[in-house]
Image (cartoon, rainbow, N blue to C red; front, side, top):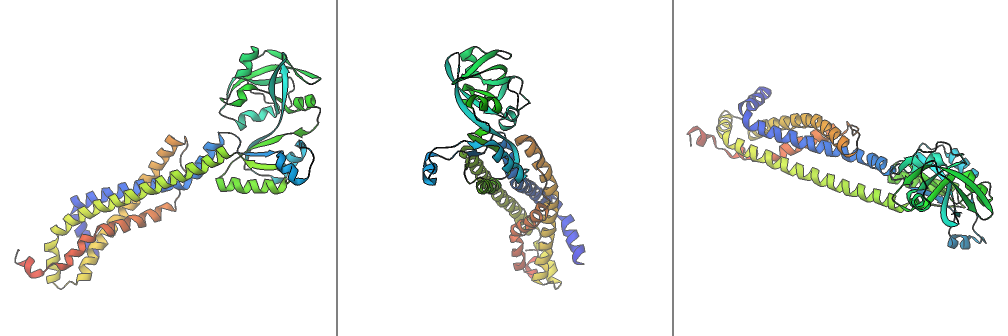
Length: 380
């Protein structure tokens, strides 16, 4: 009988209940989409920030660190040792990495900064760079180089041009494979293969620093940084603050915005349900009076209406979750270019949340307990 009464109540006020149901579906859709985005936004932001380039650096110790350690002069890092250490870690978090050796050479008797590195890693480390020409795919190519656009303008270079680079008593000839437009200090540099730079300097395995692009969350990158520090205690392992701090700050701002919007949607949904139920309570005074006249207790009558509202909240939560899944997929493609991964644990949470909101919005139905059967039966 309880179920039949509840079904009759749902069918008897379809217009007003439809308004409440639409409000619950809309609220559940937006909240589930926002929660789904909040769960996945950290991974998406990490992917986006990896496109900004390296975020960790293994470098020579500073003068203050060298003095504190009791060393006399700074020494170049050993390329093979660092590479062996990174290979031993077997970390899938390293998206790209490359060693660097910087010198100030001369082209046509004019000084220019030269960076020796693994040329095949330049594009993975700095995917935002624009190139006029072709990327060099071999890290041991000692005949080709990439030049910044400022260097190209200064020395009138273009792809396939050749020039001679000198450093102290050493000379080397290079052909320009491409011109880089980085929008930063790299536009004033020449990039050659690391073996070529080491030959000019006269060192076999010496490097100044090692740049890494590490994937993962801010906490994961910090944990990886600690692992590097324990593996390379004689080097200075540090994050590139502009990237890591910006990532953490943006993540916190997005989460505050998401939580604020979710709370606002909850309040608005509860208010909509509250207004609908207040009007519904006025319509059902006669039904309640008749139930009480037939011997129905206050708890049973109010429980019947709350069960009706709870079923409405559950239905709105289920339908809203599926709509929210589609909404989060659309948001992910619009913002990040890829779909947000669905988090199914959000479904029961959102459904329970909508049931709670519906019950909170049904507070006016409690006033039905004060209805007097005699007054209703007299038609007053």
